[in-house]
Amino acid sequence: MRVVDMHCDTIGEIYENRLLGNKYELKENNLHVDINKLIKGEYLLQNFAMFIDIKKYKNPYKTLQEMIQVYYEELEENRDIIKPVYSYEDISMCANENKIGALLTIEDAGALEGSLINLKTVYEQGVRLITLTWNHINGVGFPNFKFKIDACGNITEKVDLITPNTEFGLTAFGVELLREMERLGIIVDVSHLSDAGFYDVLKYSKKPFVASHSNARAVTNVVRNLTDDMIRKLADKGGVVGINFCSNFVMPTPHTDLTFTYIEDLVKHIKHIKNVGGIDVIALGTDFDGIQSTLEIKDASQIQLLAEALLNNDFTYEEVEKIFYKNTMNLYKELL
Ligand SMILES: [Zn+2]
Image 1: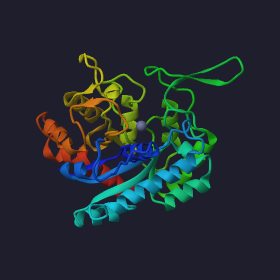
Image 2: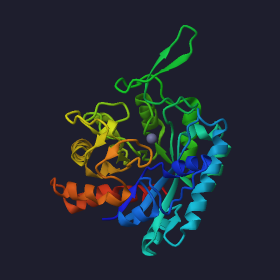
Image 3: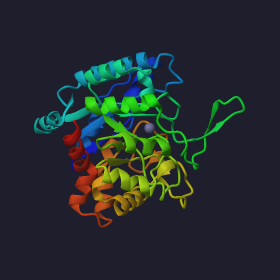
Image 4: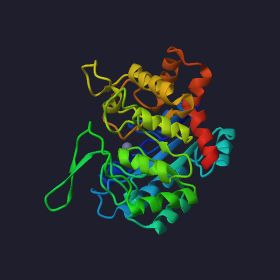
């Protein structure tokens, strides 16, 4: 079964380890994703997110540029196996050449430092999907935490995984950025974005958008997951939601080991999303190398365990194909 995964943080891990003086490579490493694991997992395409923690790095755009350089260096090192893609045709060509495609994405649009010129530059560098926010307020929009206003009128961050932020959505610049992303051909990603922001994107977007790595809030009640209404609206718009493997967003509660991600719980989310939004809205967005959980599917090489579990849970082969790559490929065909 071919695989398209909309989200992993592997390049960020390689980048950070190198800053610490450790030699990490994409070919083979002890992370969730490396070239050998992608081959074993039968991957057609992996989205590689340049995850920028805008509070950690003084010059987020500079860090982004360094990370993009690492991404291209690693692809060049492994060019006989993996290849950067920029369009649907590129992905098809890759498949024909029996190579794995790599799609460049950014997690946290704050890395663009409020500049549409930087957006244009990263598009030219190959970025084709941007997650509008991570967990910080970034000038583009608000992440999904409940915020309070203090006596001085300042917004204070309050981390609460249960209460959604239905108040603060996209900023005026966020709306402008979204429009420019759609004009250029960069896919809008609402994972991490507040509930208010989701509905702003729904209102202002003219094209389908994605939640690249989020699950169902009705199954696991955390704000990083989508409500049933959001799943339906996303499906109506023609978007997809990528199933995230982070235990906090997956486990329903009966398990005592809260940091473990069980395959049966992933199946529960997929079943629920299918019931609510239909089979065409479901995709994969593992969040490999961005999560600390212990995984039953321990890395990319074992992704087919999920296909087997779905087939054993009354999903048809055609349905599993849709979840594993066809839904995302259809979206890329339309948008890239
Ligand atoms: Zn994320």
